[in-house]
Length: 200
Image: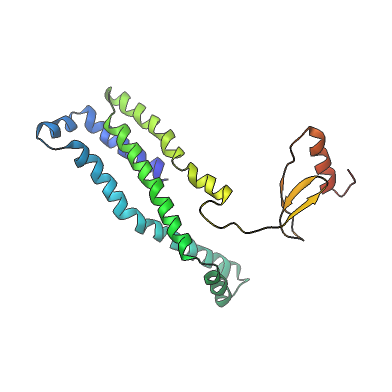
């Protein structure tokens, strides 16, 4: 959301200032336009986003409380908070804030770069906005990789079981997530037969 809303907004704003010669006017008055326009936006992001991020995390926790305790009603309030505080880890919250601020910094820097260097009239501003969208979304790639590899948090250790040559991750008695085996198509057929309870 920040990449689509804030990042492209910075590009459009700075790009329109560039093509309307407002940035050149700042340079003529002896004002460092890079510091005045770009550094202030980055500083504003650093000041505001940590509090917004923590507020969003708190809103997510409150929404889970409303859904589990109030709406579904299968868990009491005391039981919910017992399990909730049992699994809270302050370093994880700190790492999460650092990760969010790193991605926010990258998004703001990319937006400032493309907006500050825009040119070619309104079409050039639109082109710069479109070009900035790719790097801004790639700035969130570490978040996706971290969720899959557990680099920024502890993964729960799940037992590995073998069934007909296929690796399973999960707890006994549940339908586990299956990592498809490498090899020819007959391995996938063997996997299907194993799930249906037939002999391979």
